[in-house]
Amino acid sequence: MEHEAIYQLYPTVKHIQEDASGNYIARDVNSNEVSIDMSAVNTKATELQAEADAKPTAAELKASAKAKLVAGDALTEEEADTIWTQ
Image (cartoon, rainbow, N blue to C red; front, side):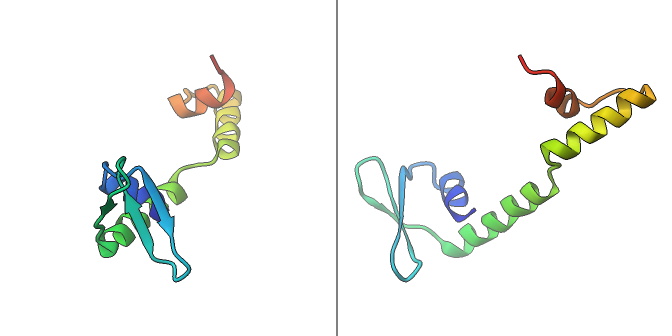
């Protein structure tokens, strides 16, 4: 999640390297190093992980959609998307 956090916090970053010590080196399109605040990155990564953990999986959505269809209840758009693809 740290990579995604860096990309979201620093839109000029186009490439991220991790050295042997686990430090991140972020570079822009011209390979110039972009200074990053790891405290902000860690906070954002925690937020992103919490969002990912809270989001239902495709299997959970399908099960919920099936149960609602059997019961005659309306589906959410996310549930419908697991059943019908365009």
